[in-house]
Image (cartoon, rainbow over all chains, first blue to last red):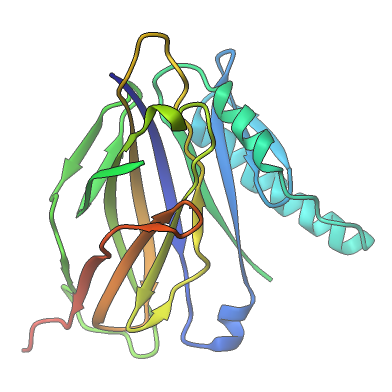
Length: 110
Length: 139
């Protein structure tokens, strides 16, 4: 029997004020273990970060995504491009060990 | 893919060895301990366990599972796509996915909600997982 595990930390924030709710942006990060290091990728922007643990890589990704968006918006550049499905598949293929692939919602407020 | 189990829990934790721990499995009602703060959303924190069996012909393929949360008829946030893939292992015929979710969900007040899971682009759905948020006890 083969059992693959995924851990998902999902945040769904909302607000009774429609204007505040409309300013929320939901992005998603996925972290896999490669050669003993955790690599995290933002699926919507293609931003990449790494860390010693899944949470560490996702924390670094969250900070990197905020920086990328801030700079891109200031400079009038694209924020990034979505990661194609076959690259996500490749990322999951390369995951090592029994620790779960870890996903996290990144919530940004404009 | 075939559904083998889905349930809510007060807390569910994915362990580093591929197992998971569940506390308060089967919870369906969340009751507020204190009063409501007028105008503020209620923040719920709970776990969800989803166990799927993967057919042999689906191994090595990306099989995303879509999750949406509705509350009092309104979808909360965007739908979430959970990318899953079982890797082929020579000689193996049984493949499973354990998806352990920690949810932080803001709801606007007491009421009823559903978690809805689907895959195959929405062609396969499972019965929605129901939960309620009760008012604080009177007095």
